[in-house]
Image 1 (tube, one colour):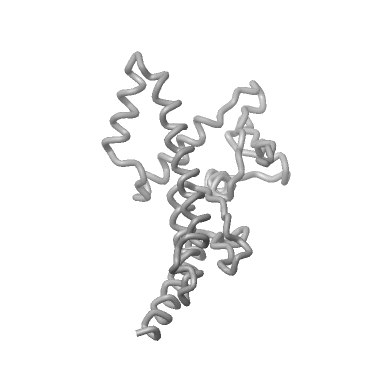
Image 2 (cartoon, one colour):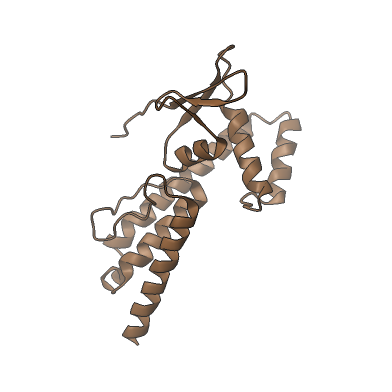
Length: 187
């Protein structure tokens, strides 16, 4: 059922500029971050040597987000990651992290699927807005999120292609205001 999509190939030139081979244009780290948030896998290679630089650039994206105050990783977790590099048991840590994120994604997908089938609140006016906000939150936390309830009246909470975080935040604020208005009418 899962379709394997070839990763987006980004080539790094000697000038350190990053080149998107699909669209034949140069991209920034923010562009690459956007591709990943949209669910696309990327592969970044050095044009001259062919070395895979993906890990290096993904870590740089995380570091830039953390330095801008968009902290996701608690200091304790960062300390544990540094310790794991110095430990002889370091080979266990990557597999543990991968398994943890896989379980998180699977659990979130099940929660979203069950929101319509089990939750009696799904008949409540404004529930679709609340559902869209929940999906947007989960997508923000994990970077990408499947939408198993698309087409069920809830819509898709993802911003339009090319939309930024500001547009997504404005949409969430508007949805929250609409939900609050609907809830106040119920009282």
